[in-house]
Every structure is written in structure tokens, then in C-alpha cells.
Image (cartoon, rainbow, N blue to C red):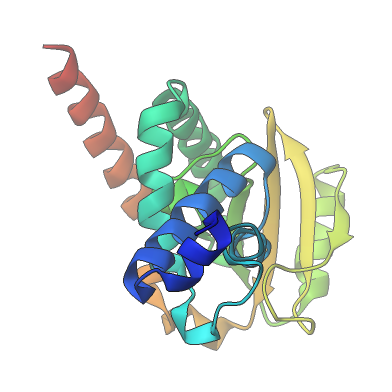
Length: 202
């Protein structure tokens, strides 16, 4: 039985785990998006012949990515702390727009390719646009992550990190609260990270 045949005969849960692990490697090593990594992993492991309901969800890929970074990225903890420090400072600068941190800095999965992703809440995207111009930020409009073509997003480089700002209507601030955090919540994560590091050094 060849490798592809073995994968085709694998139990669904086993194949889902293998795809999650391979996708995590692709995200960490090649900077692919979750969707692209998931599709490429399925193609590599099962020639793409995987039903949609058998693909891992993002939380399963997050778990695999955390394990991958812990095993193969010795610089991850320092990168994560630096990313969070920059994110926190930016949130202070952007306080007018009720910034929330999401993505890598919030989840604690700071790959080398991951941007600092901040969500801003404003009635009009031009408010953010003019604010950035007034601050002399060299930004560009970019395609937002995920399937949200109507959403506006800006990107720029800051303190060695790519920064992604996605714009949202104010009423969305109360939605999906577990997927993002305030500056105070981010500071609490940083304090906990510092405590964990001190404990590990003892």
C-alpha cells in the first residue's frame, strides 16, 4: 500500500490531525494563510481528496501551530513578547478608535510571518485614513483577511513588524469578544507571560 493509499484509508480523525499538523508547519515556515495552508496540506497528504467536513477547523490548526512553535522555534517567546509590546503601544496611539488586538499577538502564536493585527472601530474609514496621514504613517490599502471584501484594511511596517489594521463599524465592538482583546487584556497576557518566563528560569 503506498503513502497516498494509506492516507485514503486513514481514520477521519487521524487524517484531520495530520492535515492540521502539516498546515501548522506551512503557516510557520512559509507564511501561508490558514485557508491556503489547510488546502495545501490536504493536497500533499491526500491529493486534495478530503471532504470539507473532515478538514481541521482553525482552532485545531491553532493547537497544532502552538505545538510546532514550542518544538521548533526557540525564538518564539521573545518574538511574541516584542510583538505584544509594539501592539500595546500602537493601541495607545490609536485609542480614539477603540482598538482591539486579534490574531497572532492575541492568541500567542507569533510566527515569523505573522502581522500585528489590530481592529479599529469607526463610523467612517476616512477618519482612520486621515489620522494615519496626520501621523505621517506610510501605509497602504490592502485586501482584508478572510472573506470580507467590503471591509477596509491598511498595512504598514512598524518597529520591525508588519501591522495590519482592519476597520469595523462601532456596533461590531460587542461581537466575537473572545477573538480579540483590549489594551488592558493584552497587558494582562503580557504580565502572565512574564510570570511564566520567570517561573521557567527558576
